[in-house]
Length: 125
Image (cartoon, rainbow, N blue to C red; front, side, top):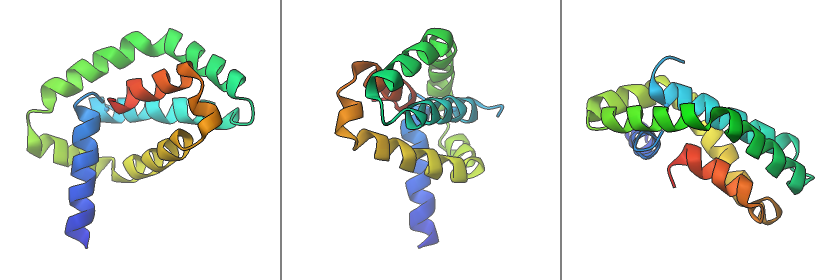
């Protein structure tokens, strides 16, 4: 069971590091994902307000997120490094991943292109 959990975290981290990333790229990207998710969650009852807040966040942070994605993609070739980062961020990976999935299941929110774009940028879709 523990091996299956570790394998899942490595897969999730690989997906995020393939475009995703404290101090390392995965950690910093997770921080951005967490911020975007919280911004949307806080306004979930008003999809237009959530979309505007997501747009504003991306306007301020898009360059940094894209640079982190490139940096993480370059380090993604090191599977041991990806596994190490996944273990270091396991709790945050699981939490923000669960919250992101919940947002993606909200049809009203997903009608807003700015929300889809923000989530896609930090989850490598």
